[in-house]
Image (cartoon, rainbow, N blue to C red; front, side, top):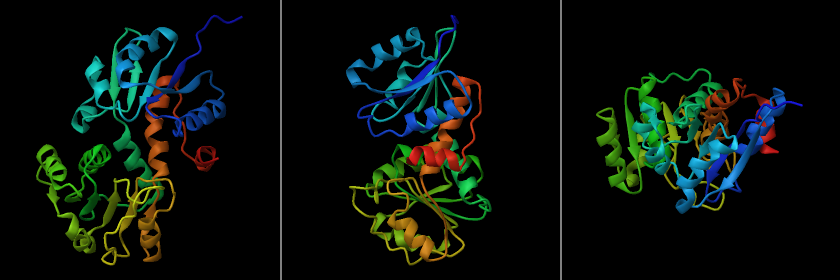
Length: 277
């Protein structure tokens, strides 16, 4: 009989039943023959700190964090990475053996790796990027685009003040464009990114005119339900290279899984199939 503790991980949020992360991590655990479990946990805001302090005592080595806790967990962490601080949110916690909680954000990493896998010829330095949205996901995307050397980023959001906050936080490479004029900036864009919920199942469609899209542009949508949004379908029909949002979910999980279980997983067709099943 082994006395070694089985490592536990999971994801906390509220609601959480919709999360595909348990399918993803369970697939990797089985694929690599590793001992461990990944558990979805619906945690109310009032219980967050008590839960975080208890999980390491139960054998948890770390967790993922989603809405509405991605900001608050940073206040409870002992160590916060620079990128999580810049983005203003954490999606990954590591419970260290010395008892300290380490907070990180891997969303930007997942975004870039998804682009590189889905559009192998993508060149971040080729020209301007247009980003729809200015929320938490947009912050992660903008931070990662700056990090890989994108020269210019146009940000457009239905609430302009939120876009202006991005410029304030990330600097002069960003320019705010009014939402009603968003279609006018597509003709110069080499990359177009939707970080809003527009186009998601049950949400409104994106109504921005897309006739300015250029055939050489790479267009990606963080929405992955449906896998091909109206934005991606229109872009594909116009000859653009399109990248769906599922890959970002898969790739952002890679660094966390490696830290928790000591095995760097591969994002392949079997991984996508396991999550879509």
